[in-house]
Length: 252
Image (cartoon, rainbow, N blue to C red; front, side, top):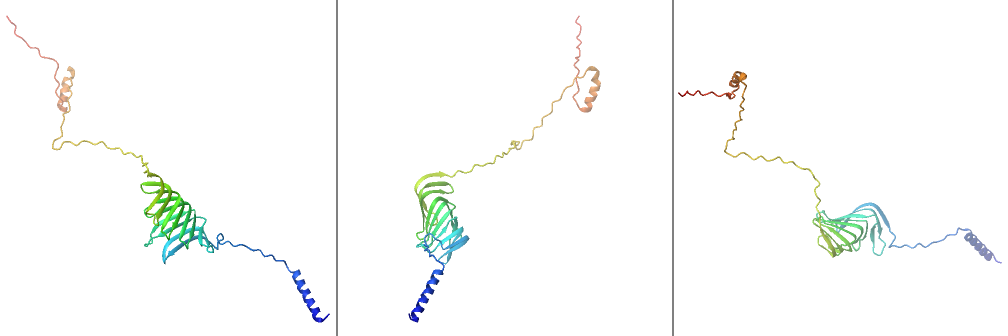
């Protein structure tokens, strides 16, 4: 056996000993689902979104998950979302609130789910369970139940579509129209009116009425004292009830 053969056998033994003495490693293939696995998570956000270099939206949410590896990338708001859209003067022309929301930002499409509450610039309120907002088509629509509260009327029905400003809209299958009931006043305070006194006729002097005088007939013993008192108090002089006897001539 040559030296070369011996050396080859030694090398092979060394390699076998190293491979047998090493730790065993197991490789597990992990499947990555870009449609259901987010690549970024952000909490307590308040973000401004621009369109063509102009700030158009303000988004507020407790949590946002970003799926930017999906075939159609989107943002997911599992804990609710509130956002406002601004006009050219940076005045809020529409506000939206929902329990859950998806935003496919390449398509510029929103899907709002759960207690959706939308207010337009005129103060009209739109309430539904599901609402879609297509910014490209400038269209807002839904196939769910919709309740619209206006200043003087409440409208309900199934299915809804509107322009992007929520100023021109219609319910596809109306169910009812109700007037808004004004709240009755709870003020029960009563005001007592002072009775009106008719004024005296103009140009006529007030009528002076004389007080009636009482006639006092004193007994004969108090006649002199009472006449004295009457002169001091300007009372009418009492007249005696006695009558004078008339003396008639005797006929012969």
